[in-house]
Length: 299
Length: 120
Image 1: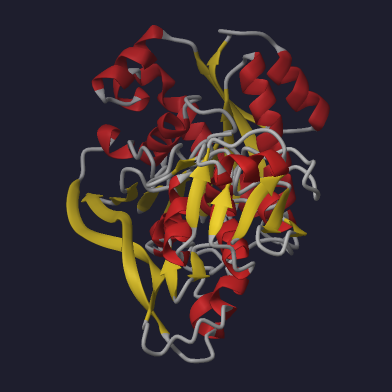
Image 2: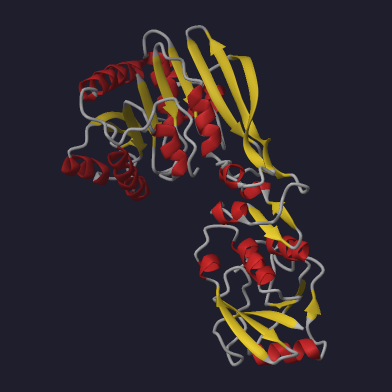
């Protein structure tokens, strides 16, 4: 079962929910930290690195002796990463999304592909819990290809939790596609509500069942509750606005360890999410993408 | 000499478009034969990224030796340099005025990008 934890707004508590849920679920659990621009699950889950792999995307390299400057490569590249100018072809690797189109269309077979590193995928372990995190290189802008590499490394046994990047752009979509259930984490503020609405629209379009977790409940207003009621959205959990939660977070600890009386909240969330994901499973999922396959498309 | 000017319109009376990659049009002026030809830059204005690169390709295809524009970013400059196009920046006013400024040596020849990418 794959459960993604996402949010429209950043800093609402995706990682908090993911980590505490991981500690509350029975059996083998794998967390995929897909927030590759700022992976932080490892701060709250002491684990040991077992494998680290550099990942990249393939970018074109042109053999000047074979190239006749026909321009087919440049015409197919919607990102203008390859251009025919003067007596040669120049490549702008930082614009290349690695689709391989130029290599395919080159009639002279003058283009070969070389891997350009964009980040690393790190696998860590602690007992029955397994963490896979992507870490994008500084200055790199192509997030989805790395997220797809993280997604490839999901263990098929046990439960998979995906800590998604914030927002509703292509990187969030790359992280949640193919999940059985999405937990949308929000806070009871006007910003939280606005971004929740965007996230709900996105997840509905992708066609994945979802529910909402309100973090720092009672710190704002009731508008998120009203919205969920009006939209018929399940409110899965409210995490109280408690100083001990913030203190635990600041120490790199978790709620289930530091605030024992909140343990049942996450245990019931774990149970509820598992039940809801199973209940929704038989539904037709026409818009669903493959769970763990790399897809060559616009990142 | 064939000169391309980034332009907001299609005639010599049109204003210079200070943007290169996302200029509305490119006006090709042949200073020897006194001919003027305008080319739309819809590919550039609609580009999600790399507008300057494809604009440089357009300029290169038009066979211009020289480009007059307002500003030129790093990728566009690299592309224009590869194409062997001379780049003059800081132009303003009409296309005709820009051509005159070039002839009178009043425009600055760029030996590198004068702005960062996406400056506008």
